[in-house]
Length: 285
Image (cartoon, rainbow, N blue to C red):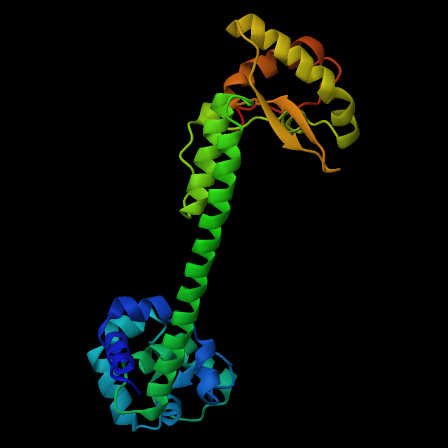
């Protein structure tokens, strides 16, 4: 093993944060060797854990004493009383012991993260570090791919300046930038996109009714929007299912009161089963 790999493995044995980041990867255990468990298929005793790591039971007991709090968080427990009697009945344990220490797969892995002087534990840590490196590499590749896609989308959006609604264009750019950074876009509730078909489905209309209603609903909403705001709503372009590009209204939730008014004027009486209204925040009012 290289000096760099040795140092990395040492960080794993010494850093609880790094151990917490990899302790879920219990699949690593069976990649190293077979792990014997009690008949319940969930727990291992101190003796079984010692056998897995090829060390003495006293070594495992000493490790538990030094790292008890962490191991407890990861599934270590000591059964006694009725709980122990139930486990003995389930697993056919004939020992007369009054307390029994148990390890889950996660706890067994936690032991391997901590245990020094064991070749098996060393191999467990190697596997963990290899998995972590592969995951980090994949994450970096994904980040590069997102950045390249975002750059292309930003160029398209820049070319669309003056053609589509400026507010919608800004909103779209915020979404693209946020996705490239792996973040959620920060968008004011009233600036979120609002779509006529989604609004109508929210009113309880089935697909066939939505298709028959949406065109005239959109026209009436555009006319009322102009009456209320003194200007026509903005436009955007979208690709249809057949691959062609068409121009549509760039509705946002700021127009929701207009949608509700159009609904009440022209459609509410036809569809009295409609559910509660939406709010600007996107939920039921």
